[in-house]
Length: 88
Image (cartoon, rainbow, N blue to C red; front, side, top):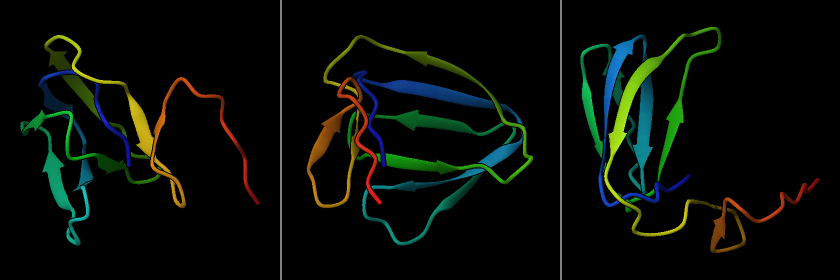
């Protein structure tokens, strides 16, 4: 899962589609070309694109409100600017 650092972001799907899971929701939702996805700093989300699938979006956002980062197992929020740690 990852966050977005902006107060609000809006993504217009132009081509293709993806599945998005937000926070701890058990069900992902399908988004296809023509969909509008509004993204806030919370909840964090994950995007899954089918292998070989092409996705094109137009993304616009407002000013920064927090750091960009990831939710890492066995850790809390990790800044995207922290060096990557590879675990077995």
